[in-house]
Length: 96
Image (tube, rainbow, N blue to C red):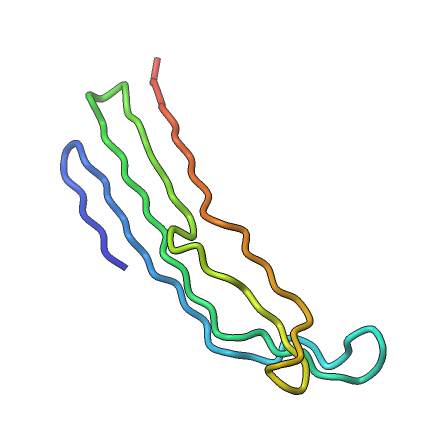
């Protein structure tokens, strides 16, 4: 994770990663293991304060468009694959 802040700017970049793990011991049909494969994603957040009352912020989650995958006993046995895509948010705040 990297963070930079000063009077006007607030910038954050984070790479989150999790190694392969056993996510379930039952797949709905019986006692079969489900393994979630290693997964990592990059998230960004940038904010700018024009003054004490007005600020804007931009956030991007999963910038690298990573895929999450779950498999059974063998890696070739895909049980669940999802690609949620990157998500973006733009916001503004004004304090009265």
